[in-house]
Length: 313
Length: 311
Image (cartoon, rainbow over all chains, first blue to last red):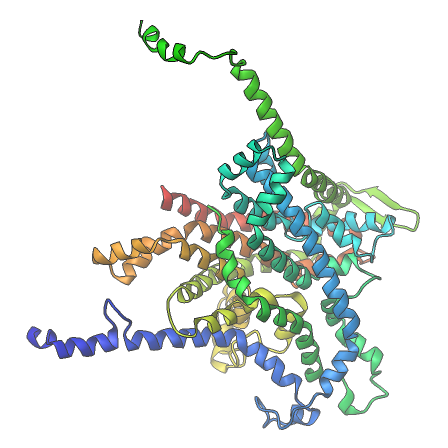
């Protein structure tokens, strides 16, 4: 029996199915791809669902036979959603509201991270502790007094209401970015700094000509993540920008209302009532800029986390 | 005697000037370094005071008062702990929402952790079309925003299709004891939604996996370890630290999420005539306390495990 099992032919067949030291067997490969496809489906299904529904005509929506393949490419929903969302304006507002605080937050976080990584001073542990605290404290525990102060200063609805905290390292999830830069600057060889100092470089000079160029990946990662998080953040933006700029996610949260303002329910035909397809178009238009950005920059999402060592030791 | 023997070395190259007292010089260098350090960090310290510490204390002050915002200013009427007792004992909704939040978070965290660990390990293998799968698996990082998630949930895209309507499952749910029903129901209806919260966690796990030295796997394989053993003895312990990090990150993300029912309730109460800012502040602090408790429950054992794994 064992002789049969150890016959080279049998071994070869076994290797084909179950794999050997050198390569994976076919069974393992099938399981692997099945898992990958299943998980990929979990993430893609809602997007596909959203997209397919957004191009359904009202007739297709009512037709129970039409599930995944619409009978025609109907762009009317997008036209409506585009108008309801006031797309060009809200898109620009969203870009502004996410890119500007993100840029400032990244720059400031790098300065703070450099200070924490390259200098020894008393009370550093306390700063780290408070840094963690700023990450943990829920926004609603600090937002009301800030809102009232902004109101007094007439800053409510002004983008400065979001920019000012970012400028002082208290932006949305600033602690994470500070820690990223802390990690990055800690791995900078001390020798570089010392030789620059011997050449008479000042501390600021060392920061700008040695530390910053060496940390470009960290800057890019921080900027990308900061932009995405600011874009997706709605709790603070709704409160701070009330009565001022309207961002895309804000407009999406009041989509039904905005739709009825534009197409009053009594006056339009039944096909122009707010339906799922229009809502899905709105949602899709909302994430489209992020999707575009993601596909353009996906290399950075994937690779640079490894460079920045976000994992921490 | 021995000291004198080593002296000649010094005498061959006599120092022209005596070295300055080392201690004084060191202290001044130290002070200089510290001053520069403070200079770099100062902006954060100011920001922390202005944008975090003071508002936090003010919110606490509000929570002890009845707050009326008028055109001229803010009127405070001292209420002692009345806002807190109201939230804890009188309000029928708040405590229920907080309990719901606690249960849901405690269920979601292990799912997110295990799921993201599995996905990261899959992505760490070599296979064809890896780039494509990576792009798909990192989509949640970009998309997880409140309104989008709300629309997806409303459309039923968040649940496993057909699971809620399945009569066998509905029967199973009604047979469960009351205390068990809501967690199980949550698990069934929101399973897919939970997976949408694992984007960054996958990224962090992947980064940690790629730091493991490949030689370790090879050595283990030569020693005859199976893949199963390699997972339990090598991979899992080296992921212990990031698991704690991921757990904390997950709890925070779920707790701060703008679609969180407790947060929405507090937000609505802020603008409510009956409740107002004082009451909302009190609830914020109670919620904060519960969140810390959840954080401790989740992170404590993981941190202990991490410490033991590296001991």
